[in-house]
Length: 190
Image 1 (spheres, helix red, strand yellow):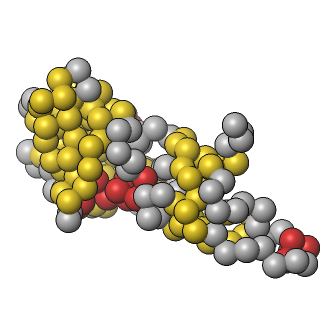
Image 2 (tube, rainbow, N blue to C red):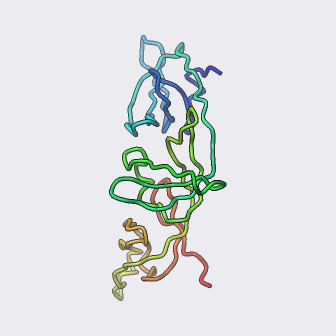
């Protein structure tokens, strides 16, 4: 199926110069005396590189034939992240940190994720938008700090650092938006 420039929306998969890309964001640009263009920020699904390109209204793209599969994240070794198909644990595969990008900060062993397969090869994974994490390191809140409604940085079980409100303590379980990396709320305790 072919896609026009106006159909390139975030999370749309398409073929550009022979490679599959996912749209990260788009902006419509109108310049005087010129035809309007669409500025597209996109990630190459094969190597993880992010590009920005301007396309004319007349440009047409082929939709990338991607398939979603459920996979389970197993473990990381150096810059390799290992997964298995959820319905067939013996089928294991790896993805490199370059391709996963920021998702590596929020990967927890045994988490079930959506994988994106292109030409029968898994090329990327999508994390759930909200995930729970245990806080493993948190500086104590200093009395009187709360007047400014401040934030402090804590370390999650995955090693990622995030800003949270001052009332969050070590061993709390919090919910993080994995797309923005921001604190959402404290998970209900027990």
